[in-house]
Image 1 (cartoon, helix red, strand yellow):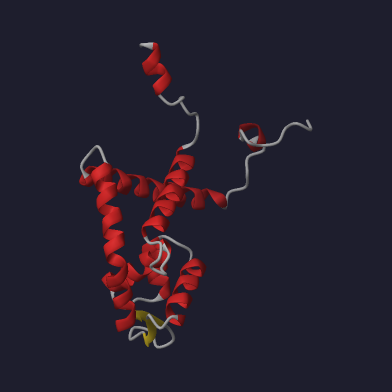
Image 2 (cartoon, rainbow, N blue to C red; image 1 turned 180 degrees about the horizontal axis):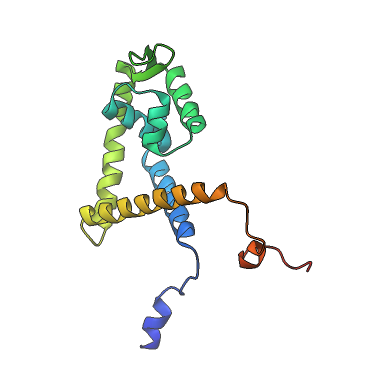
Length: 178
């Protein structure tokens, strides 16, 4: 390999896949923060608005599950959206004790207002990919499915007592005092 090509390539990273995904998520957040600057809506809030528009009236638990976030996090966003008058609570016909949340006309107007800068950011991102968007979506879905499977396995084994030699197998365990 020519020396100039080797110098141009980034150093090989020996880092975990979860770290790479975390970094991707953080970078996407920064990118969308810039794209939505001045709209008064944060990217995570816009995700909630968008889902509420597309999914229709849903319980907070349903929305949290669809977004893959804890209910407490979703509740923070919904409280903000409700406080702005962009959504309202309606009775849940399937369960008289719970409520569903739905966007108001004002909330739908927020989505219409934020859609153009968001759409421009999506178009710029997709134009910057070196492969078809459909192929990227397949890989992302596969990663999501792998995370779900791994999480289910982790949950199933978390009830098991830890192995006696677990510290030796843990590469981040502090063994300096041994």
